[in-house]
Image (tube, rainbow, N blue to C red; front, side, top):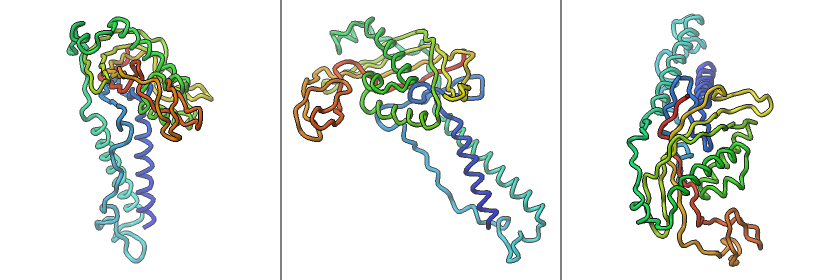
Length: 304
């Protein structure tokens, strides 16, 4: 019985160790650091629940059943020498691990695709101005790229106020939870030498006084993770840039109010990005009157 428990335990440890290696980088863990030569990610997240794991790690009744796992009263497998049943244990566990890893790898790749920049249609000025007549299109594109760089740098430097100013509250909270993991592991995600390759406004809509804009952004940059103490690269590599193509969704409230009621004490207070109630110090949730990031989807990535 002890041998079965040890085998199960080693399987779990090994499996979780392998999965732990498939970590993502980029702000919010968007890049896949694979050992292969290509970077093909369809991973995405939004301000809903994309960072909560959907997969379950349950167990079934197959462990502990079947004649090859049963003990006789003498404490050995039926009719087998210790060497033979040890070999059977090893082969069985190894086979289960391989099957399990193939299953996980298949799931991780399921539904991922690379979307070409040329297949994404850019909206015309008239189409954009029907929804947001005040938008300076070129200025908006420039701000999307500059905000993207600022957000990546804020992520790299654990600059929480800067992250909050550039994202919705939900995205901000998800970023912070991911940064807490980096802190716990004493690691830092290095991102630098950004270069804009392409940018297009692909969608725009207005619902309940909130304008939503989706932009295709393609950049190249260095992106890797280091151990803060040793400065050794632990994920990715620092010799080549990566090319990544995003769909970025930004939102803004066209009817933003200057004052709100504090949800804790009920006082009417002026709200600013990153504000707190001056009476009870409760953090104020807000919808920004300028465009902030509400969703980011990686649709293509590769090493240069």
